[in-house]
Length: 174
View (cartoon, one colour):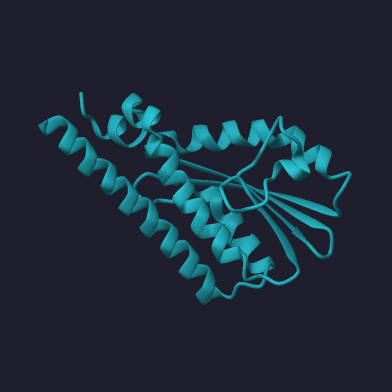
């Protein structure tokens, strides 16, 4: 049955066609492009046309985005896009998944910050995602620029989810 949960977070057809990955990577691409303007950082993103995070983390765990600063600080960002009822579960799962890696990275960097970014399929950020705002501020984004990034990430997730609904409608009408 085509329930809201099924369409935005559980459809096996969408999963095999890469549509959930497309939505996730669209948000990640925007964020990575927005961060490229920051001077004195190295950016690694698990999407095409960026250096791979595995350069730093190895192949066993590859977070969505890594940023190293000139003062030897590291930001490890992991993005989840899910149905509202799954936000807390995804936050807990990702925190546990990357806990050991962040401990290991502390030996290589002065400071390691894990940014556990969870967004619902309808553009709502989990409260724990406030670490993104802290990261943006530490990288020199003022309030106006932070709002721009957040607003555009919300816009991307809403538009890509809407596109998924349109595809679902076409498939069910065929």
